[in-house]
Image (cartoon, rainbow, N blue to C red; front, side):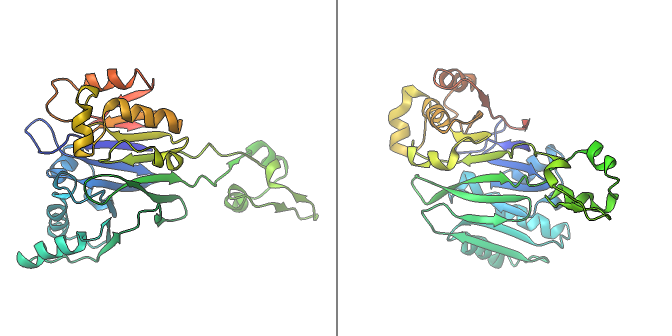
Length: 301
């Protein structure tokens, strides 16, 4: 997996910081997660091909998480996009976007599909042969979901020495990778486990957007490879976190520890603080493996 942080600061865009937006590359798929103002400019700065984005996941309808969406949709049209575009987000997102397009007499020359979400329980919103995406119900001032991205790592590793030893034709390699046994010309059946090695453990990425500290999401996050969890405030402003239904860096670390995450990625920093390193220092008093998100940062895992 490769994660590119396009923006990771709270509230308003500034000349030196951008609101929330991320690009996740997984199994040759590219997903855009949230779309704050300036997202398409950040896509260009980070040399990400617009045409590769086919699925956009919006966590909630606060401006710093989706105000860049209608502009990006319009730019796709100006670039003569032909491929379908799927947008996943809270109920109401379709009305908001289509109203802006209609009143500006704009249109798309490609198919635009909205998948509106209302459930307060986790549900699968996207699935193909390589990836599955589930919602993570969060508690914020408006209806909000995080998203859990899971690899389907079903391809086994070929044991080339064993395959060559049985003189198996290359045309059967794909069948073997997907768990198939092989019957030789003399009728002998070679079990798959003698021809392959176990696949690498499947990786996962959890995006927990704006939310108050909430331990109810931990079962969904159990053993996640990388957990992005908002950390708008430091512990000294916990009262503001509670009032605005956000989290502190220390609270994010508690979630990571309870979920047994491999890595905690912090973001959505309030711009009241002079150094984001303070968020890492605070979180590491609870959970060791902490990374700071920052605009333009790439993380491979």
